Length: 144
Figure 1 (cartoon, helix red, strand yellow):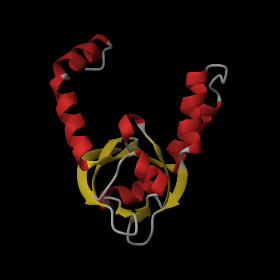
Figure 2 (cartoon, helix red, strand yellow):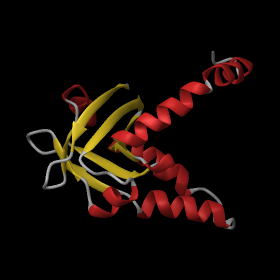
Figure 3 (cartoon, one colour):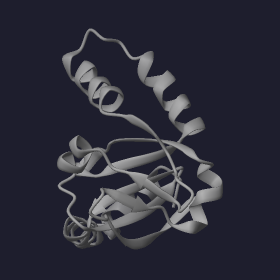
Figure 4 (cartoon, helix red, strand yellow):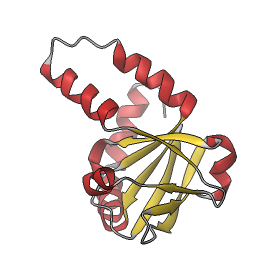
């Protein structure tokens, strides 16, 4: 399980170090794709394969479904983690998430999210304003 928040930076060669505590769970091959809220998502290969299968079964008759599936699948790249624990972020994904140098890698259960540091700070502040409301909704679902 991936949890926690880590400050990292993208080097001039577009490489990003994956937090060492996650490397053994990721093995050496991952998938990076466009995430919601303008972040990137790193999936372990097994989790990605399960998600891709689900996406592949969605009905293609609705334009919003087609658009989402295209964005997730066509926007994905498989990537190897090098011996120093780094991954290469392709330009089109870096651009999508507005990543510059300083990023946050957030562990979110079965995936990692890569955020521009400033966007992450803004997102967190906004999300934290709604914690009581979200807790009530989760309580109604029996989750919290």
